[in-house]
Image (cartoon, rainbow, N blue to C red; front, side, top):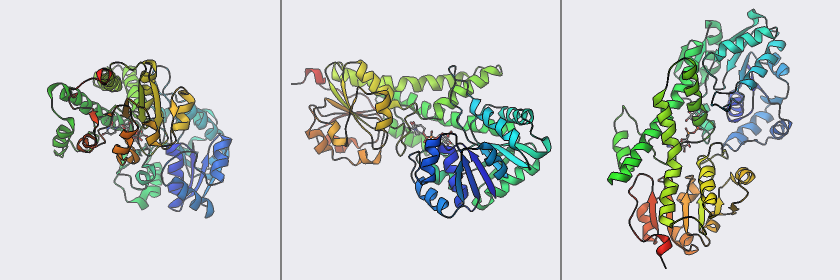
Length: 441
Ligand code: UGA
C-alpha cells in the first residue's frame, strides 16, 4: 500500500520505517531540512534502538523516502498519517497547531480518495476538527475520510512495540475508511478494535493516564512504606501477582517523565475541565508525581546535612533508559535542586548529555560513569540504564569521598552495594539510621 507519514519524530519515523519494512511504499514528510538530510543518508535523527537498521534497509530497497512537501506526500498516500507533535500549551491544553497546519495542506492537495489518519495524541473531537480544516482548505468531501489510530509505542522499545502491538485501535466514521486501515495492519495479526472517532481518541488518553496513575499509586504507597517500615518492592510484587492488577508499571521511583505521560495527564485534566468534569483523581496522580523527586532529594539533603559545598554524582539523565529524550526528565529537576542547594554536580548519561548540557551548563559532564564518582560525597541514580546496574561498585566507591548511594529507581541490589561499604537508600524503604555525612570524619 502507498503510505505517507507526516512528522518524523519518535512516532512518525518508527511507524514509517516499520510499515516500509512490511512492504508498503512509504513517504515520510518533515519540514526540518536537517532531519531530512540525515534521513536521506540513513542516519536516524532520534536515538531509538533498531531504527537505523530498518531505515538503511528500506532506503536501499526503495520502500522508504522522505520529502518536505505535504502536498507531495498527500498525492502519494492512499493513507496519510498525521504524526506531528502536540506539545502542552502554557495551561496544559494540547497545542494542535501543527496538526491543523498539516490538515490544511492535505486539504489543498487532495486529488484522489485518501484516508487521513490522526496518529498524534489529540484532544477528543480533533478528528472532526481535522475534517473541517480539510474541507475549508478545499478538500472534496467524497475524496477523504478522517480516522483516529492512536499509537501505543514506548520510547526505547518503539520498533518492537510497533512491530508487535498488543492492540490496534481504529476510530472511523465509515466502514470503508476502517477497512483500509484493517488491510494495512492485517499482516501483523493483532487484535483490533474498531470504534467511533471520539472513543478512539479517548482510549489513548485513558490508557496513558491510567498507567501514569498506576505508577503514582505505587509511588504514594512507597511514601507510606518509608514511614511504616515496609518495603514497596515486596508490596508491588505481592500486588502484581493478582492478575486483575498485573505486575507492570508498579515500579516505584522518582516519578514519571517523558514526552507522553506528563503531557497527556495535563491534557486530559484540561479536556475534562472543558467538558465540565473535575478529574480530581488525575490531579492527585499528577500531584504525587510532582512531589516524588523533591521528596527523595530532601532525604538525600538530610543525609548530607545540606548540599552546600558537597559534590554529588548523578547517573542517568534521559527520562528512561534506551532513549536520548530528556523531555520532562526527572534528572533535570534533580540536578536543578542540587545546583540550587550549592552542590557541585557531576553527571553522566550514555546518550542524553548533549541535550542536558544545553539547558544545564553548570553541571560537570563526565565521559564515563566512574568519573562521576571522583571526590563525590554521594551518588544519585536517576535513570536505570543497564550499564549502571552493571557497574563495579567497589571501583566506583574507591574514588568517592563518602560511599553514599541514593537509588531513585530501585535498580540496584542493596546487599551487593552494602557489601562494598555503601550507605544505600532507595525509594519506598525506610531511611536508614546512621551518622549524617556532615558529621562523619
Ligand atoms: C508511554 C506509554 O507507555 C506508551 O504506551 C505510549 O504510546 C507513549 O507513552 C506515548 O503516548 O507515546 P513512554 O513515555 O515512551 O510510553 O515510556 P514508558 O515506558 O511508559 O515510561 C514513562 C515514564 O514512567 C518513565 O519516566 C518511566 O521511568 C516511568 N515508569 C514506568 C515508572 O516510574 N514506573 C514504572 O513502573 C513504569
